[in-house]
Length: 384
Ligand SMILES: *Cc1c(COP(=O)(O)O)cnc(C)c1O
Image 1 (cartoon, rainbow, N blue to C red):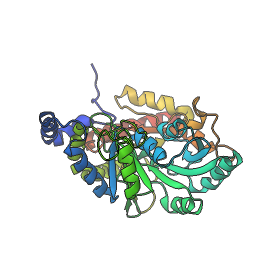
Image 2 (cartoon, protein in one colour):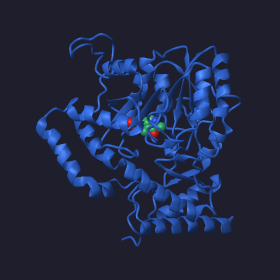
Image 3 (tube, rainbow, N blue to C red):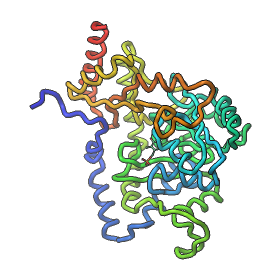
Image 4 (spheres, helix red, strand yellow):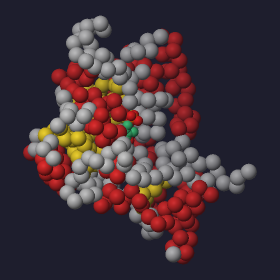
């Protein structure tokens, strides 16, 4: 028996209460129609996704990791090439580079936003050259839903002939000074993993680009290198398509996405107002809107375990994204890092902790979470 409410970290069932009926009808329509692979809903969703952010093309693929791999494949990135990326991110960001046989070069993050620090890029480029690698691309990550500081990043890419690939798995739809993530970068990728801000009911992903030529190439690559028709194979490709059922789910979710991003602002603002006197709350850059994939605070590294345990005892789930930066992971620690190391990435990984966040978090539940967070922080302060 428990004396506290049932709180979900990300409540996907609450959304179903809002859009469940339309969603079920949309899914059943696909089941009855029978066009399970590249049915009309895929093209319809791709058009909606491109329009939402203002990109020219969207290409639906099997997941967000494949989206990145297909972009690297389309660019012909492989052995001897360097791709700069952050280390404080989900593994997929660097995994795809290594998978293609290229070398990820890890850059430092900005301590306020946790996104790649434009000031670290020159050192990363330098590191790539010292390793006698050809710098080809930069993968940025719109971490926790906030777009990176793209003005200086784009200038750097242009100056150094790097292709900018924005991994917007968490930040698709974020606003950067009037531009929408998804339409920033030569390519943007996103993931529809269920827990992402725009998630489906399984795996899914997409690539966004303004390039007609690359859009056509990517459509071929996702479908066994298809040419004019299904059994015309003009290049080596893979099987990586967005399922029709998932596209149908996403059409319904996209209809409420703008409203959900709004709702997330309210939840984030309430957290920040209630917690900022006690703890480091997230910093959103001026003229920017986050999609709040996560609401991440920072606590003392030595106290984090106790903090999470205290909240868990009250039924409040928390998660650490990410406990170990990639340059310290077994699979990636032999890859080069910018400059003399990444102390900010290492420190932040020890201190971050994410609180429950979703558009349907009601005020009473949030107030309960806030009280529990404040109690956990102040009891620690007195114990210390
Ligand atoms: C989730 C995520 C991915 C991978 O997406 P999948 O659809 O799970 O393959 C890539 N990059 C980032 C930053 C992510 O958060």
